[in-house]
Length: 268
Image (cartoon, rainbow, N blue to C red):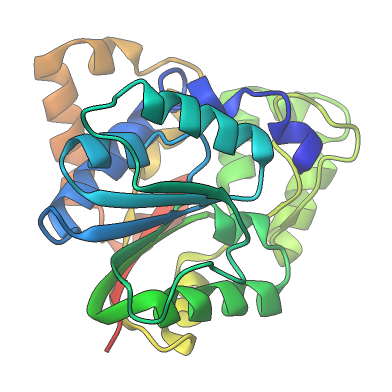
């Protein structure tokens, strides 16, 4: 995983083929986060794609990421908005957060759950999020769905390339995604959830789950090929697309078709 992120591509991903993921994630955070100036811990916050806009909206945002490169990028970007910098930026582990008990109003986990491939590690990270949240505090936890590589394989043609079908078969069998040849378009070591499994893991960590929602929805795989650019580039069409996704964001029979889903939960 480290070699994958050391390429530095994560910093620009959400402004390129990840635009729909970014727009929908921002929309869901705007809907569910407590109002500023609430304290938000962005766990696995990478270069600050979500942390920095939240800081600009006057949230007190603390970013933690295991990659030193990401932390350096986030620190430089924070210095670039001196009127609304991040409150703190540190290298850290989702399983051992450097924050006091009940010190946050919200915790974002928009990457750690798919990079922690063992259930015990995901459970520990979720319990840490619960520990640092105040009672009533919000958890927003994202996961990649078990079927993402099947859809990518069809839309992007990866299934026609040697080796990808074997990757898909393992993803479907146990959720353990591997890219042994480090193909640049086939992601990195990860765990892919079934949506109901994500809900169970969050609940088992002590949270009251409010819902699991699709982020990109069933059109998400097309976004990675830029097939949706015409929709996203035009404000009117973009809003039609976002409304369409919103209408079915909680539909259980469609959740697995979204590349990413988000669990929203509160600490009792």
